[in-house]
Length: 326
Image 1 (cartoon, rainbow, N blue to C red):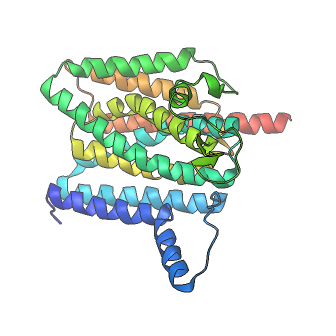
Image 2: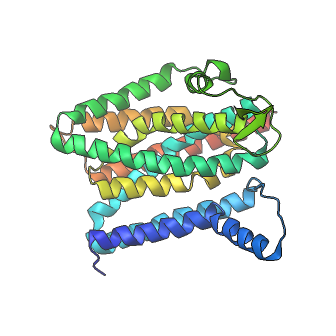
Image 3: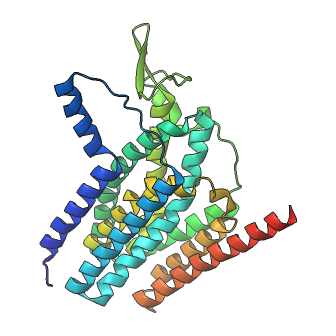
């Protein structure tokens, strides 16, 4: 099977469009609206958080879809592009796990119930996809126009690794000191209580932003900041916008299901930060020395997979040891 890049874009758009519509419940919402319109009934629009079983099934589906698309790339472009896609996908997915820890911290600090978190993550994913496409296109264009930017991207990754090394693990977050919240308060007052799933509410004729909207803003800004690490990491593997965008969007699209899947056990990934630091160091060094020594995509993929495997296995062993000692 030989498809042109344009045809691959169409296949990718169809897969992501349909899958996101089902996963985010867009199709169900449209169907409910039509049903309510013709039957003159009202339904509760609150979307409950995904259960562990639902999250597991949806995560498997998203990973399988990425695998199917990788197979299509293999049949069209061959092994090299397929390895670039898979490496980019695995990198983005693994770096996003650290992002989820902050999402969980934001939801906990703002006291957002589990049943409201799914909607915020759904909207946040759609925003993240749009912003990341823009950042990827800009990054790819800079690398093609100014080759020396590759050293800038490598430096960004190394700085990100050093930042994670010196960053202390925080169990609380002062929302009032958050830059995004301070900026938001300049334009609209913020309500501290949560009464429903609305992003805005009116009190005595005054429009207030709810904690749900505050969390959406923080998540959006945080994801963009994290993208400054993850996107250069993928661009270190390939500068092909098609591979970078598709691998990134496949990874981001499955984050909502992955969040509900690992949110209850993420604290048991004891060596997550260590693994991500090593990962960023490796990719940063790879991109900096690329002019003098090129590490192949296959070797990069194997090293990334090895780092993540060791991190997960070591975390499982430590979790089992702690359980036995308690």
